[in-house]
Length: 96
Image 1: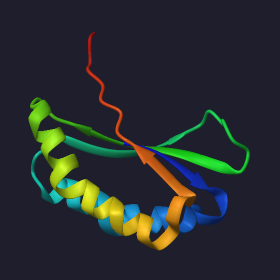
Image 2: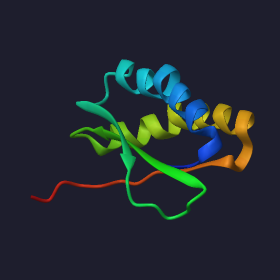
Image 3: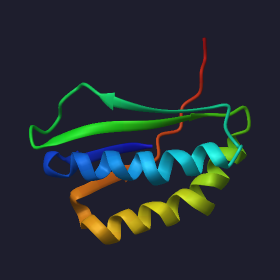
Image 4: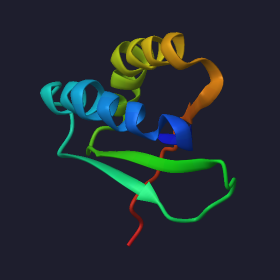
């Protein structure tokens, strides 16, 4: 998942990921690894970018968790901050 976060909300976002999103991903037992990374490439000077990376051998596990759990959590976040934090799913595959 990739996030674009208004700088003023970075603390709120980091707290939410630490208390809600990352624990939910880890507790689901669907993933081999769960990481949060700060994207250093700056696209918008008013925003910071983060990625939450989950690794799994089963693509259906990732898609299922995104649809069943993550969207509910992200809807809650959006209800609190509106469009000031944008997010989208980025599926990747290791090729080498």
